[in-house]
Length: 427
Image (cartoon, rainbow, N blue to C red):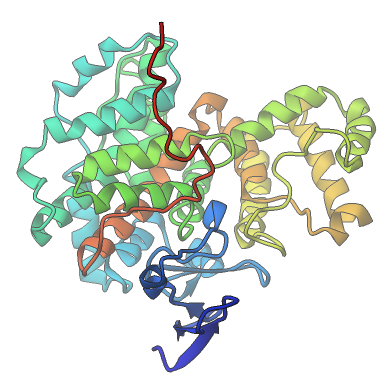
């Protein structure tokens, strides 16, 4: 793996030889671990040029618009697979056989309920609390209810914790919504699939059980697939960092939820709707497009372009088709906000300014429109992202613990005072 070498030449010092590591695909990586012996280390804010770990789970080529889970293109998984099969793939490395898939689905269904006492935990939150604040607290508190799977050095415990988290996140997410609405919390139903069950717990009540639309359930499942994992992003790196300290899996996932909450990360689709509110009406589009093109104007069009993808976001292509299906199913033709979103999409796909800069609509743009159309409030968008991303987080956590690892300890470039003494007389 390290058959090549790089030399670091620092003026006045002997060259430092560094191994060059080669992965399956992607650029070579210079191994700088031996640098500390020279009394130096690298400086890389945002970790834009630093690989923090070795992983076999997800690969992204942002220049080419490629996203692979265990080698399978995201477009194929979204079209030919479903969320729980994708979960199995991420967790185990291979697609399941028919029997393995049935067993996995059965296990998930048997873990969808949460401890009954957990319901009382919600009463400690204000009714107007942000759903992500509740999610952080409730998921972190799961370790107080499930003591039998907290030994991180036990592979069976890690497996049980993974199953519990994937199974219970839709239940907790729906409970969070119901609590904010003042409605009774709905128990999961084992006769429904993963996405259908989530929509059932979100929108049904004890006095009225409505059938779940297959089109909306399929759209929800695709949203889950497209958000299941995205390599070493901020929240996944947070989960790995927390896990490197030996923290229990529920605490690690709660840490991931906290990182995801940031508007620059998981709050992006929520920011899309906020932007549409700011624009207000189709008649204002030209003014705001001009503001977006003005480099001196702080206004940004949210949901266009992506930090990683310098070409089209491969997930957005799937989401656009799903978006059209959902709007057609619901017969939404006169929603001003959705009309505004569609007009912005048209401009982004045809205006030379956006095309030259690859500022295409990304997955957040379309998923925000879909979730709004389904009836999910904006405050729940990031909760659904956390629900979907849990399997990615727990897959990376399991991968890290399955081999040798060190507690994360980034270095710093210190620019503060040198050592100084307190004044002798401070009266």
